[in-house]
Image 1 (cartoon, rainbow, N blue to C red):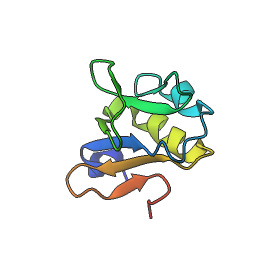
Image 2 (image 1 turned 180 degrees about the vertical axis):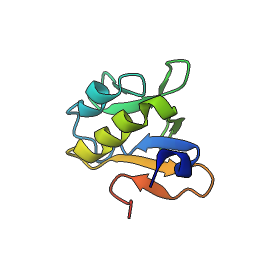
Image 3 (image 1 turned 180 degrees about the horizontal axis):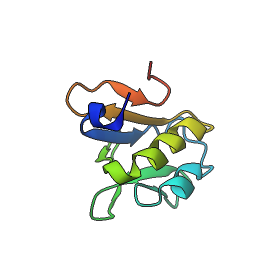
Image 4 (image 1 turned 135 degrees about the horizontal axis):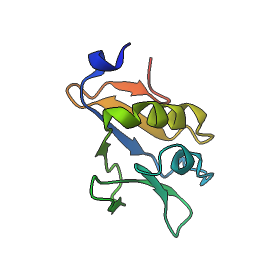
Length: 96
């Protein structure tokens, strides 16, 4: 699937599965950050850590490859990238 066909995307992390390896923060530090608890969280567009369970943030198109790579490489399989329009997961453990 080409990037133009995906539409707006959002990403969230399942902290229950997060192993705290920080691979996501290495790939896309603009989107992911490890908190003091050692787990990864997504950040808002204004760099605020979003710690609510299931919190999502939009994936800017220029960062899509980095976010998709972080979902693929995550040892905890806890990063979920889905289309905003229909909530279908396009990258992550539940993607087809």
